[in-house]
Length: 593
Picture 1 (cartoon, helix red, strand yellow):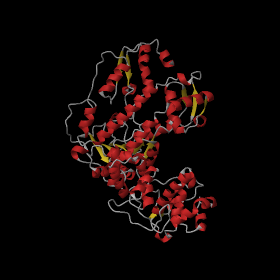
Picture 2 (spheres, rainbow, N blue to C red):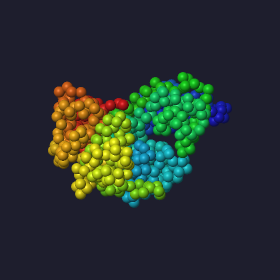
Picture 3 (tube, helix red, strand yellow):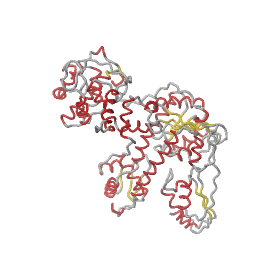
Picture 4 (cartoon, rainbow, N blue to C red):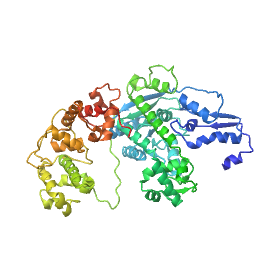
């Protein structure tokens, strides 16, 4: 306001708006403050307005004209094609594959940018690149301004080969010789994707735009979209708590309204955009209220518009997924999206037309995890029996139901791993395990030892690091059976349960991993029986059985596969039995929850 007041006596011949797509509530990078530009134009009596953007669809162009109150504007579209960019979407199996590809690309590709969706992933990629002796720096919104500026200048001057960044990086970067832009995570929209790959090859020389794609990333982006839509109740609770405090730490505010800091973040963002409070720098964690007289019922937060924006963001993400999943020319589909219907249907510069140019992945070493000085080496670094661990987890689920407490109250996962590692044969061995004290022996000990004494320590099947939610299976063949007891009668050998008991266990909330451990059968065999039952009309909550993220990933992978479950399995970032895939597809589209 003070700047506009100072300009009140000046006639402005031209008001130029850069990154004009930010004014559109339906664009990929909406910024509420841009919507004040129409009023600013009126106050400074601008004779002409020039709005510039590199990523506006026809719909967003109309929105820009309306928001700036432009009457019959002249629109110049210079063309979206960047013929020197080789556009590639590469399906990958998971983070290890992605990291190996990025290491190989960084060695061969010259200066480059890697985009990641979260600060955690930025730090992960930087750590692996540095461990591979590649000079990499990280950039994200959680860094202080001076630190971000220093990192950007290092990259622009050529002192760092690769910069790994969230979408906070890029605007105003003046570096023409960027040879590749890679996406470690799926971007949220085609507009964001096109804007980010456009930072490569500005010198006109050949450059590589590589999107590393798997459906697990799509699930993560969907969760992030939903996190930006706090409930009305949470926003109003946060506001009442903020009014009571007037100023203070966000941590204190989270305690006052009984929610976590991540949950509170979305509510504060809305309140800040509406002008009701201000937050300090990202690192100081402070806030202060600017409109303490406003009651919760009178907040200037448009919840209906918020719902529409979230729906729009989902739609934009779905378009990005369709682009990544297409078999046609990448360039043609991208240009057509931005309104260039005359672009050729094939090109010489995308992997759909000319094959992949991505280098083969290198073996990578993860950056060592920093330990606190007081932290002792973890016992998780030694092997344990994976099959026993899965049976103990299933027992824990049963005990939790019997005693009506959460599973972690019975045993933590770390304690179960220790039990699967030590394989105690009696009370003395049980009590020697950290986290398994006398009280737990009295309540659960005999049932635990009935499982662990079936496996002598010499027979342990070692597994290192974090456990999988399900043991790896050889698909189409039954799992080799050992003399483990069932969880109810602890006899000398597991027995296969009849179909009636299988469905009863499903109704009680058992997961596929629980069923596999309890019945001594492969997950694929069980899924096949359940799929047959569903086809015969039985009711089954497949998302609960498989886990919602796993079920949604399978259904997303099935789009465009025309029912070919083998093709679906190739697309998945995790192993899955064909019967499990068929079972997931019995409920159709991915959930929106």
